[in-house]
Image: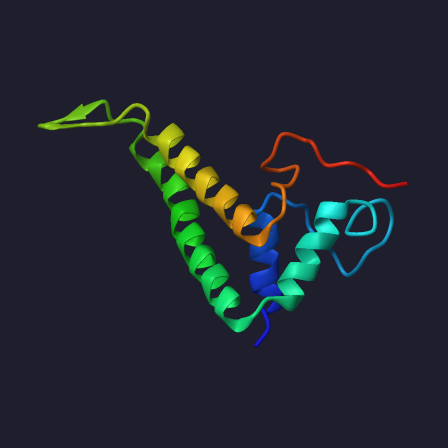
Length: 125
């Protein structure tokens, strides 16, 4: 069994890597970032049991990702009857989402990408 293009796209996105496009061209992609190449290799060569774990991460991350913008619907309410808005909800949801993204990276054995990590990826020229 192998991942669909949509699953690979979600895995890249959740790991913080930029869009892959139609293939490696220009100055981006696996040819220029060692970690990107490792991610592509792992996504294409996982065992079935490992793919199941990644699919579990993808499902959890999709749910957590949807909860972040949903928190925006409650930003205008400071207090309603006995309900009081958690002023840190958006930050806490985003932090939880990013934590799970880092867990996926750790499971795949790749550093978080530029969209998630500390910018420590190196350019190979």
